[in-house]
Image 1 (cartoon, rainbow, N blue to C red):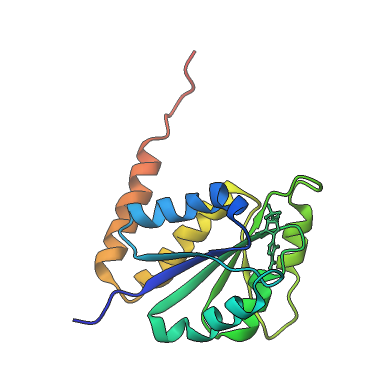
Image 2: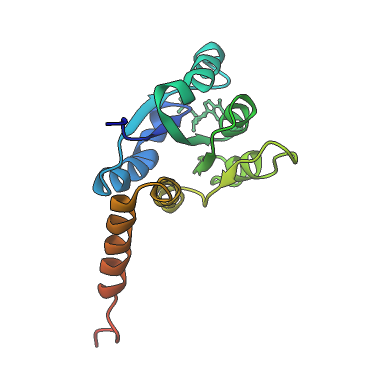
Length: 162
Ligand SMILES: Nc1c(C(=O)O)ncn1[C@@H]1O[C@H](COP(=O)(O)O)[C@@H](O)[C@H]1O
């Protein structure tokens, strides 16, 4: 049997983990295999290069890259692979993540990064989006995604509590 396609979750620093854990959590809930690593364009450029170049061969189908501040990581990884790259702007202390967002979102045409919202919501949605991409070729995952979405919908009360 072919190995299940994996999602790689990479982040620029250990300090990004509390945010990026939300991506790992939702993928775990949807039973999607993940490979989590710390990779930095700035601090570990060789590791980043080796990771991006080897990703396809390692069965990685989608890369979620989270970084804060001068968040060049998602774009640099996108420059090195044709795999879909989803960028999560981690909330920075100095500029509340505006810097992270703007560093990730405005890529030049030809090198796409799918940019999510700042912080935890962005990390969760990156996981859901990665799962949706994989679900295109995985009927069982499609079923799990539909069930998850329906449960979220069902959990919304029709009226607020008095
Ligand atoms: N933006 C980047 C990159 C990169 O883009 O390569 N590498 C680390 N960082 C970010 O620096 C912030 C502060 O990192 P520290 O907490 O380690 O000082 C983190 O949010 C990280 O993503």
